[in-house]
Length: 433
Ligand SMILES: Nc1nc2c(ncn2[C@@H]2O[C@H](COP(=O)(O)OP(=O)(O)OP(=O)(O)O)[C@@H](O)[C@H]2O)c(=O)[nH]1
Ligand SMILES: [Mg+2]
Image (cartoon, rainbow, N blue to C red; front, side, top):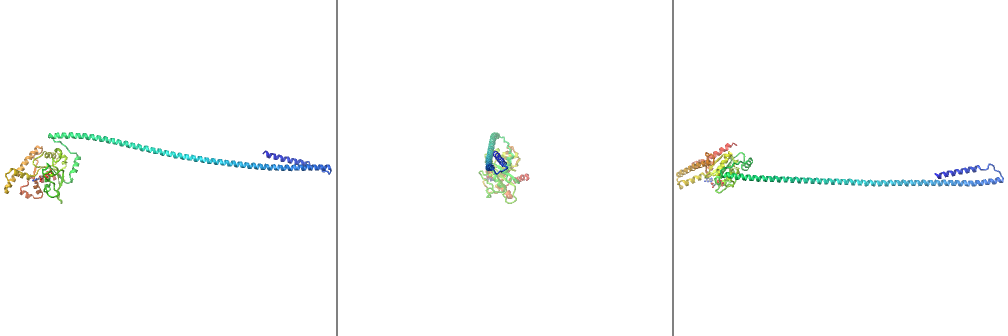
């Protein structure tokens, strides 16, 4: 602004001077020397002034130009400075933006890292929590298992203790019973419903629709032979259906035998060959229950020479269990022959009538003696003495079952066999299937 002011002042001065010069022009011109010299002087002055004026104009122009240049330069400078400043500002802003971007990027990365770290931490915590939970569950499970084991151990010990006490009680009872038995008092032992069911399932075959008849008695008394006879089979027959018989112990476990007929009508008797008492280590009073004899519909006790303690016990049990029971004295033919040989002076006479007489006499003797003897035995055993005793021989029974009655009668070999069969059938009917 200062420069601009001086330029205008200078121009104003130059104009004033020029005006003064113009106004100093002599108004009148005389051709006198003085006037000429004055004129020349004036012209000189004018020239000097013009020159000065021109110089001043030039200078003013120069000054103006310089000022203009200066202003242009200043403007340029200013522009450049502005541009520089602008650029710097822009660069600054750019740098700031870049820095900001970097900062944001760093922040974002940091945030991402933080998020990742937090996620990892959460994951880790979750994993740890899961591990802890798993461990807790495992520990709980182990504890439960240990508790169960302890409980099982406790129950086992309790059961063992209970079993031990029961065993002791059983031993005590058994000892007591044995003592009673030795003293002549028979213990009363009843099977449980479960034992009955098990015995039925184990022994009866087939269970339904059949009449189950057990043949019991001492070893060798003729049980298996009687079963064969009832089924119309002779001892030693080649049939695979025949029950094994012999002078040595042959029947060791209860075995079922059905009617051997393969075609109907087959009878509904199932005969059970029961091991002879004394063949097992079971005590007499335990025999009935241990063999499961309480499941049968009829029990035939086969006796040979005389009633045994065992036979009586079986019959007593039959009464207790309300099971029909028959007493069969087997081997009648053998006893008759023995009596003939022992009690009669008969040495195999060929005389048929003599033989017949002796036979009939011996037979009568055997029958009457047997009945008397057995009545006494029954009384002694506390049983009904009027209970019939069937005196039979297997040969006669087989013949009877095979329909050879007439021939038998002629030979006087029939004693109680027909009655035995009739009574067996009666028992079957009484059972009413
Ligand atoms: N003479 C004759 N002998 C008989 C009669 N019944 C059986 N016997 C014989 O007596 C012996 C024994 O007969 P088994 O039928 O095996 O006697 P068990 O009672 O079944 O014998 P275990 O099965 O050992 O208990 C055998 O030699 C038979 O032949 C009969 O009525 N008359
Ligand atoms: Mg037998």
